[in-house]
Image (tube, rainbow, N blue to C red):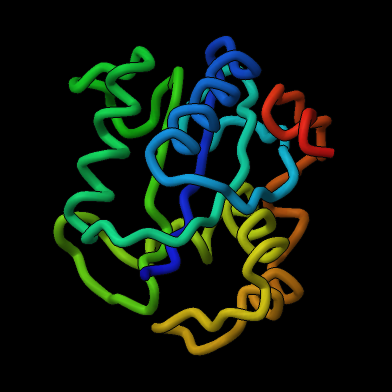
Length: 168
């Protein structure tokens, strides 16, 4: 079983698409470990604020199969295959970690956004803070402690998701 961590983001009908993304990830992978939900300004372009979070799960799927599954979920929820890198998103799913694998194909693992963007690092540190980044060799908790928090402003927002709210 591989431990994987997936970043979810949306800035178009964001509550709806975060819920739909969580439903689809649960259907594809099973029980998820969830970070808090954060609101953050768009990075790299002028646009509406995003909702972002990270989900962790164990899977028997290969890295290639996980990457394909995430793309299918994005396309099923309104993502255009021609979407530019820095543009509005209905649902953005990025595989951040696949165990301690380091690779560029079929996706960049670990994803370089982990150390650059608060909206990825903070939620990852919440649920996997003890894990060590396989390249920089520091825990995600330590990386978050060292992160310049003035660089990007985040705000925790309530996660409203029927499946998680029923389990509490």
